[in-house]
Amino acid sequence: MRMGYFLSCEEYSPAELVEQARLAEEAGFQALWVSDHYHPWVDAQGESPFVWSVIGALSQACRLPVTTAVTCPTIRIHPAVVAQAAATSAVMLEGRFVLGVGSGEALNEHVLGGRWPGADERLEMLEEAVDVMRQLWAGDFVSHRGRHYTVEQARVYTRPESPPPVYVSGFGPKAIDLAARIGDGYINTQPDADMVRQFREGGGADKPAAAGFKACYAPTEEEAVRIAYQLWPNACPVSCPRCCRPRATSSRPARWSPRSRWVARSPAARTRSGSSRASSSTVRRASTSSTWPTWVRTTASSSTCIAGRSFPSWEASLLR
Image (cartoon, rainbow, N blue to C red; front, top):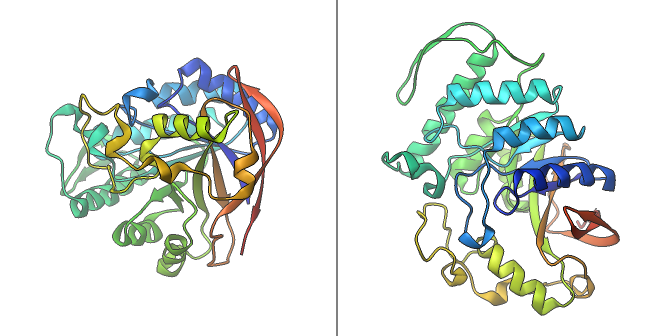
């Protein structure tokens, strides 16, 4: 297992993200996730820089592997363009790049005014998009006329020695099956044992699986709950908001989840202190085991100042 740090493009400016990456490497984190959105989840988060510019800067700031968590290569950006962006990122990161992909949310993908497809169609689009990108990464001229995408005599000239791995996100059974079938790995927002088991049994076998979790540190539990609820109400939703378009009321967290869902469940969590902002870590595991820990225990050690805020260093142990 490796522990990584999540660069939240929803919360921080490009300069802060780059500084966090540099300090995360110094603190001992082993990898980076970076989100790829047009909008933040809620207005209170306040940021949303263009991820490909941020990745270019990250390549010059640290040596950690970088994974997009996740990119939607289907609607807002054509897969041929994402293929070029991912190839360039892999070159700049000297191969330390993973393209995490998913079927997207209307929150980000509606901005060009097109139709928002249903879930089955979006998964079909994602499968074709991944195929288009892999054709382009092979280095030849590509012409493609599929059900959803057309590519006319396109070639990606700047490419890494090996194509970037594609980790596919999935939350429902159909998306997980697609991830197992076409992905080089699996990526999820939480370490869910049942989902990882379905991925492995559906063909994922010993492919890497990556998951994330979010934590908030504050002087008191009450303050930590308040901050987490304000900035990440969607991290513990009652009903999935993935198809919601932004509204003037999007800064109100009540539509996402009850505040009580954010109260820490483990005794250790109730004693932690530190930052006044929410932070995230990623968990990656590549093994032949079909099991996944029910949850991950984290313990704070010496704090590390990241972008002017105190974040803990992390240790993690898997609970069987």
